[in-house]
Image 1 (cartoon, rainbow, N blue to C red):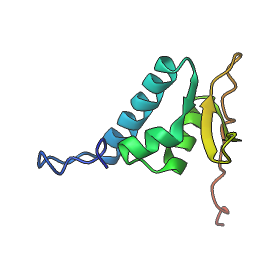
Image 2 (tube, rainbow, N blue to C red):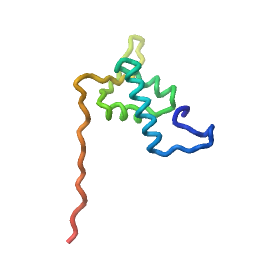
Image 3 (cartoon, rainbow, N blue to C red):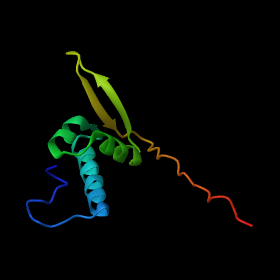
Length: 99
């Protein structure tokens, strides 16, 4: 929890601020790694859960895949390709109307 924890400074970070930090971290990682990020290493280094980081990459239009390496280990990779395909917007309707 090195990146998203603020215990050492004694300050607190809201959920929105944490989310924004993870979004910026994911965007920066995509730029640095030429739009293909092995995010399991990023999770280990930052303490962010893999499912949260994978969902963040998907919201940015990336495809997340698990690739097997030659030594048999599995590596999670997010890649952004052109044209960018954003996930569909889900519009939820309200509950039943009361009479």
